[in-house]
Structure formats: structure tokens, C-alpha cells
Length: 148
Image (tube, rainbow, N blue to C red; front, side, top):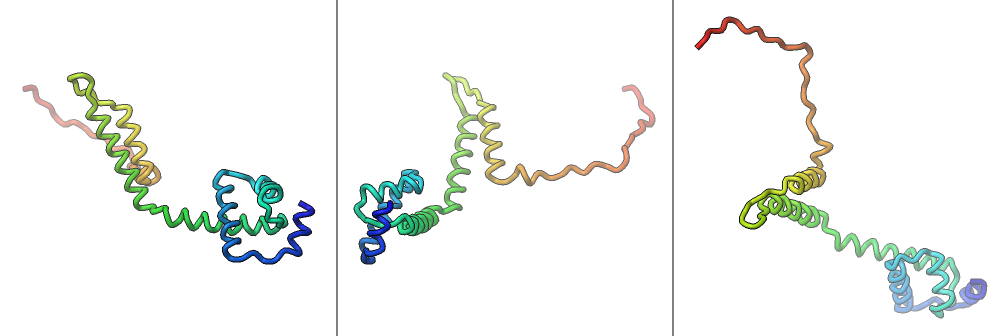
């Protein structure tokens, strides 16, 4: 990286188009799961950009911001929640309506699993109401009985 660093100091600032191309290339590498060291090695050996590790870090930072914005734009939490809830409800229904041959035999284990997952999704696990316990024991006395 030593010669790339020296070349970077005398290198002209890339055009907006070149910068966009570089950021896009780095973003693709990040999407593949490449760590910083591997990205720097790729830039140094294969890109032909002749830039320093510090410049690569700036490109990685820009690419990361762009990827985060892209993820935010495509992530509609309400829609994802509704889709997950609908899928679990469909699986629950299918488990209870399961047919084997001509017989309707509900799959209770799968239905219970689906219900538990729905409870988690809806936040019902943490919202479990506490059952009030009486302060003192309550006793009943049976007064008179008659035979019928």
C-alpha cells in the first residue's frame, strides 16, 4: 500500500462520476461480506485507482451510508409486520385444518408453535397481565345439605 499512498498524494481528485463508480464498486464488495482489509487489498492490487488506505476508508464510509439509506427505503416495517402476521395466521389455520386421507386431523403441535410465534410478534409475551392474589385465604362453609 506504500506506493499507492505516494500516488494518492499527487493524484487529482476524481470526477463525480468516477467517485460514484468507486463507491458503487466498494458497496458491491461490502454486500459480498468483504472485510476492510480485503477491500483495501483489492483496491491496491486490482482496481487501478492508486489511492491510500485512508481514501479507501472514506469510500467504505460513503458506500456504507448509501447501503443504509437503500435498506431504509426498502424496509417498510408495517408491511413486513403484516406479512409475517398473515403468514403465521395462515400456517395456524392450515395446521388446524390438516387432512390425512379423508380424515381431518389437526396438527396441534404446529398450531401451538404458530400461536407462540404470533404472541412474540404481537409482543404478548412481555405484556402478560399479572393475576391478582388475594391477601388472605378465602374459605367457604357449607351450611346444610339435603338429599335428593
